[in-house]
Image (cartoon, rainbow, N blue to C red; front, side, top):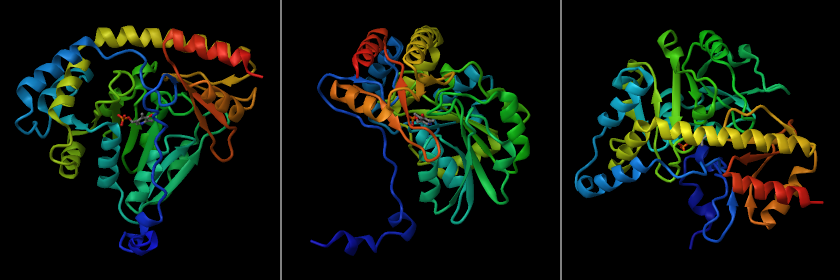
Length: 353
Ligand SMILES: *Cc1c(COP(=O)(O)O)cnc(C)c1O
């Protein structure tokens, strides 16, 4: 058998140099409380199950619609845009990959803030591009001019941001878009939980691209579906880059049904927001600092050492995410679970040394 070094030389140098993205831990089997990757604690809309059953019955023999027109029509109607402004992907991560492949080439610069979603850096490395990293200040604000380095070909902004849960107001996102001579990807994976979103900016800012996920708000992380809303000309270019059948018949049917049940989204959303504020209050009372979250998780720093708390919770089968970013205090990112899950978490936290 060849040694790893023997075969590694076949690999493109920029790939061999890369670390590879490490997703959050997905424990399998057993009983635990999973609050580490921001899944929705409630089941998807019952209409999703019905749509899946129908799609399994008549849909699997043939290839799916390559562009997912029926899905795109539903998404377009929801956002008040045209279907040719929507592109669907195998999760919003696929949409982010398509965007990066379209706009970032070898040696090109792409910008994103830190601390934020770590995948952006991986996607840029896959293209052999270079990252231009803009730091958040201690209050999770950004210096918009700092994104404007010469040669920046794409900017990513998770909004609401992870791990902070904080959001930049649409007017400020518009001000950023106006400063840029490149597309601005507003990653709204958590947009379903936020007070505002940036889709209305598209009208006057053709360089704004908004991405959405079904994994958080719609309880469909296991299905893999996301989409973006952008200028129709941009979408036409992205269509050349995506895999022909990047979304399967089941996810397209389920996603359409999920979007059609906005009443269910509102119901689960309001439960999550209520639990979120209870969780944040309790964590603050325990001496931790908690940001004003607009997402389905909270970010807690300070107080009892986060590393020790993380380990103790894990020992008791409660998974949260310990995150460390150079130059920022370590913290715990805790997904908003059901009331029972959060009660249990708070009970364990109270008993910790
Ligand atoms: C979860 C998440 C995504 C990925 O969502 P998928 O649709 O599951 O691929 C993208 N961006 C951010 C900021 C996220 O937290």
